[in-house]
Image (cartoon, rainbow, N blue to C red; front, top):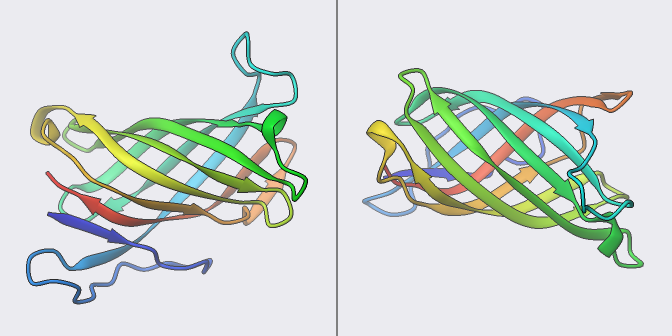
Length: 162
């Protein structure tokens, strides 16, 4: 079992191992993300926003990964505090072509520009065909942002079973 742990909101993240249980110690993972806003699909409320998030890095036990995730920010359903629903769906692809699909649902807050999701592994292919897992995915405010494009570090905490 691979366990992924929240590294925190640091600009430079490293992979470190901590003891949580004899069978599945958590592993801190910081991944590089870049995103770009685009038009939402037809039928999406006009106030909402959509973006594509490209994430790269190394997942323990899998190795180097690239990914594309589609994100929907439900601004039309935000509360008075400036926070509301956010969803993320996509696939991590390993160097050998095996994939892991994830779905994530959570909360985005305008004041902090932070998204906090609960993710679930929804499937995989090839060597990762039986993948499963769940946990937290934190996306702090981007390190850079201009004209609808941004970059920053994203953090995972949870499990990913091969």
